[in-house]
Length: 168
Image (tube, rainbow, N blue to C red; front, side, top):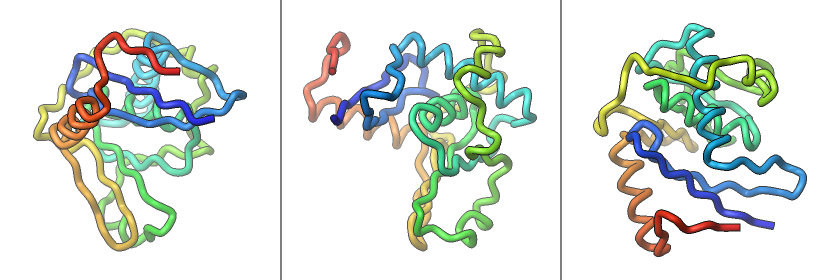
């Protein structure tokens, strides 16, 4: 089964879109659950020493933790780095991530419940701030929050989505 979920938030740091491929055995999260986990993930990042505007490489995480961590990074005011399997270590060395989240150090949903669901960022990125770096082959694509927002709004209009729509 392929299910498409769209997460739209009121703050620019998290107004991004993700298409998630879900299977019956994977957890289903409401928007409220997702936002709570994003705040808890941001508190986990703070506890682990991440600073706003730093770059975080998300390496080999699966649903739902990859999405939760990505939105937590954005809520925190940092940049997400994603790399395709064809991207080499040389690409990542040039980008210099400050922090790596992988299967070894990534918290579980259960461990995130130990963190507060309240999160007050010390830095709120503007639309022009870096949001995402994507490494593929020998290319590096750098996107601002504005770039992601424009792409999200374009897709929203193309698909004819409305604020109260539900997709299953």
